[in-house]
Amino acid sequence: MHLGILRRFFHNRTEKRAAAFLLAVVMILLPICVLVIRARAAPLAIPIFESVAESRVKRIVSETAEELISARESTDFCILTYASDGSVKSVWVDSEAVNRFQTELSQKLEKKLSGMTLTCRIKSGDLICPHLFSGSGLSLTVRGSVYGGVSAQIVSDLAEGGLNQTLHRLKVAVSAPLTITVLGEETRLTVTTHVLIGETVIVGALPGGVVVGG
Image 1 (cartoon, one colour):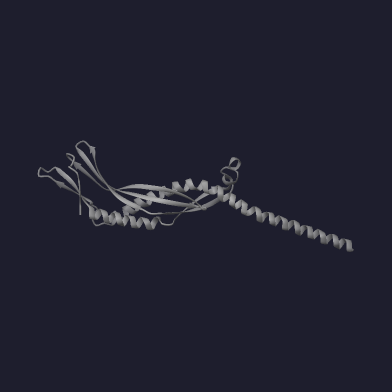
Image 2 (tube, one colour):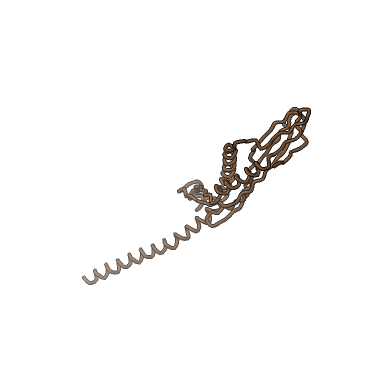
């Protein structure tokens, strides 16, 4: 009787020790697995986020510029001046309107791009053993944050547009230096977008130049 009780006692004790040992192993391996996954996920996610950030920033810049242009009472940033013979003498740029548009665009873009969040999905097989399980396993969601500023510069140029024609284009060159943070790692890139805000077709000889006025 006593022997049976002792056996059950030691048997239960052994099971408890085995369970405690397994729990300890799991508690040790779990953080290691998490660290391994984090270390492998960042290098895979960063190129994806760079591509996504570039395309998203360019789309936001174009959409914001179009919104500002459509909200303006007058969309003419440039005025043609003519000589006495009727030919185009020069292109007059309304610098006050252009500078105001440039400032408004920069302010709106800084609000939209500040703290932007990106997400992508990566298969667990690509993180643990890509040589054997590439493209398989559970889909893990990786998040990244984008921070950065914006600078806008007006670009005006004249170019031949065809037979006896000249094209005058007024563009906004928006430069957005970005910092992308992914799982504790950072990468930096600069996205440059050119947005056409005005185009004039001039028939005749090439004008003498572009006049920037107030």
